[in-house]
Image (tube, rainbow, N blue to C red; front, side, top):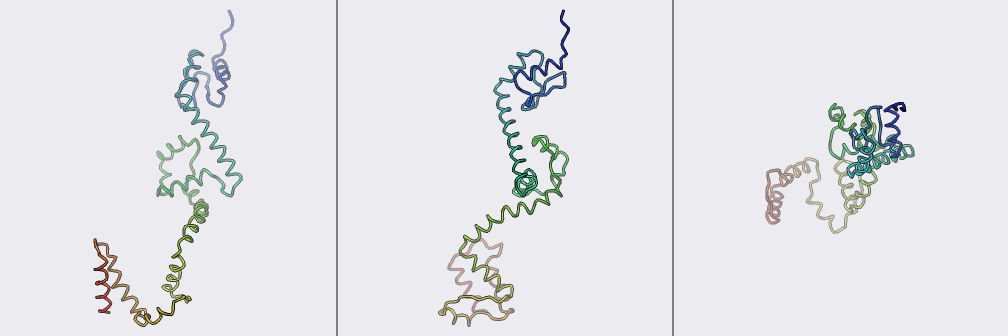
Length: 224
């Protein structure tokens, strides 16, 4: 009677037969399916083989391989770019986009859940703060392209310079210069004008027709 084979060796042989060394693991007693995150049937080889051919396993296997390839690609990108860790950068960017404070990832249950399904350790909140510069530098070119496509940006910048008290040159058409005699020229007059006109944008104002706005401006101008 041939000697009884060691079960651990048998399970390893089954795994090797279906080329599943990167998909299945065994502790010598049972077989664990990594893509399905569950124990695979291991009483008989045909049961194990059937599990490997089920549609559920094939779908999970596809996701498992995609995740593995993505992690590999992230590692390659992180080693070839100025960003030390692409996973941490993307985590930081995602939390910022979702308006989630960094201290939320210090929650034990939240961290365990993410680490379980991400397949790696999460960075701490202090590490996240170190990646803010990377996120800023990534978004800054997009912001500049959007801002400089606004034809009114130069005018807004000039107004900002004037309100800040800096000297600036404004190209004013000659036909508009005579009207400046009606404009307030002292800081007190300017402040008074702003306090009067800012009530147009009061929070409790529900409706303002163009005609009413015209009458409102004329009345306040005459009062000043």
